[in-house]
Image 1 (cartoon, rainbow, N blue to C red):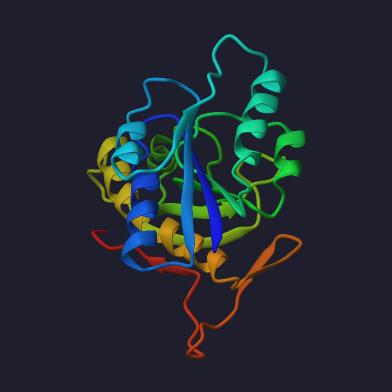
Image 2: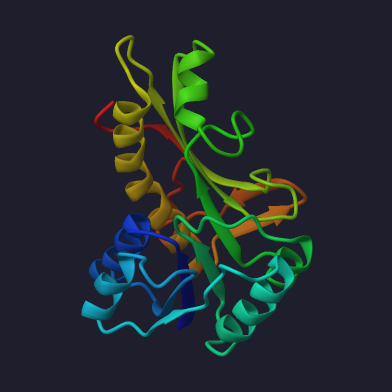
Length: 216
């Protein structure tokens, strides 16, 4: 049984998708804690309703180093096999990412390495891209550039706004993030430098590590 700790800053919609998939698909894992960096993170109420322990490690008014040292103590108390960033709006230091190397996962709303950082949807539209999407990756000290686990592409429509594109990509995120976490739980992910390979499932079937998203 693997322990998963999820970090959020807001509504935690990807956290909710992971919690539901873990229960519905009967993973050999449990979400042992949901931790927020602010008291007004809406996702805390959902986690509490599911009986998941919730904690807040306030980031405001602290140095990055102090906040992360406090956060790591709280996370490590749950002995996590995997730490999942689900809308956790903090840029992490190399010391923190090194401490959780190989067991820290994130989702980013673009087809990395394109458009790291913020304002991804507006940037993709302004650049005239025909496709955008979402990327699940392991976190390293380089922002939004860790080994890629899974990607989904979403076509950009001629009348798209950042908001409409965001809505369609978020729906895809709710599919691929639980899938990637499940692969980790099943010990099917192998990382060689920046390349992540996926072992076949117990039935010998392999799954693609990219696809075109639904509702595109």
